[in-house]
Length: 282
Image 1 (cartoon, helix red, strand yellow):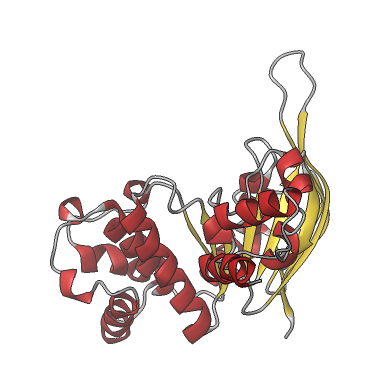
Image 2 (tube, one colour):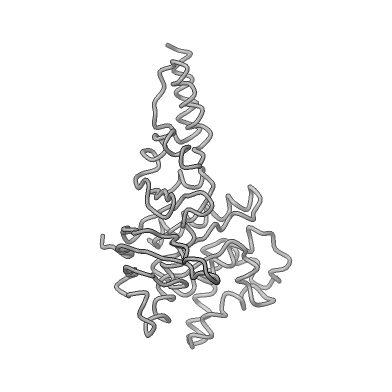
């Protein structure tokens, strides 16, 4: 698989106010993401994770270095329209992305602006709504929907544009547990069935554990970059950065500290139950 995102020596500083110096948020990031990967980006507040996400969609541009998305340099203003069709972005608050009073009209909004013919637009809208299990709500008003349903509508609007990559900036932060489960199920389905590359910014460790890969950011740099099982096996390092690990991983870690022989790479409830059962049988 080829790289769809290539980030080289990325530095970014927010402009200064008055006499203060610019604040450097990203400090030489080197990162590649392959087509079809499902990558979580973790980090405490101020680590630079959301700033990094906004560079992939050219909402922000590098102070130094390069970001290439599907062969397009994000700094090339002439390619901005094409870039944002290939790399869509879903934000934390779905209300900020919903612009119409009818669900199907909202999903069609970007396609109308792109001049997509009606028959093709109708097909894409229906397919996108079915993909996120919201087709039955196509005539509803978004204001009547739950937070999780609204977020799925926002995702449908991005899917209708046929992107190769979707960047999700804490899309479940404002949702209840049921809404979080709905959105994560939708994201996983899109990744597995359509091969869309997913870059998920999240502070929920259980969501990150469902991804193919985790990138942990700390103070504007990449501190860890590996599979969830490997990243979360470094419990002390992750905690020193200011993050949690999945609860089952922390439980297994505490058991090991107490002298019990349990694996150091547990990330699911099933694995934890099996390990504890094994202790009782020993």
